[in-house]
Image (cartoon, rainbow, N blue to C red):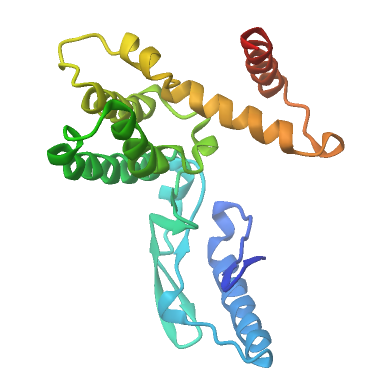
Length: 227
């Protein structure tokens, strides 16, 4: 069980063959949780409860349980859920979160397009950072290792933002524009965020992951060279 403020999350790790048994155990667990919350003058809201199977596609498709009885409410199983602003899908490939970022960021760009040309380049850059990059960079460390096709969707957002700020045409190459604005491409922003998190995490509690350490050392070396 994991609890954050008024958000309670219960995780159960089971083989596919024991899904029915796990659902019954989960229902009893939620009933006990509801009783515990009631003792603290809190109330579990079944209508706001969501249930989702997590796992590889072939395993999730093998599960035949489509709803779970939670107290007096039947809760249907969903394929995606929003947790602290991040949309998690049942296969954990982050496609739902990428689609959410893609839609919201382009919606912001469409709203800014009529007015951004009235700003100076520096002012337009600041506005884009506040309204677009806020979405693009939020929890972007979760995007590490996602497919190239999803990275390209996120990169399309950044490219559109760079063209809007500088007035660059679609047929012009975007890499020089990103360098001019001092914007790291999306895949490098993700690695940079991971490096920052590793640096800020206590050394004695870090997990020694060779690829992550390699990326951190590369970014640290670039920073040392730049200074």
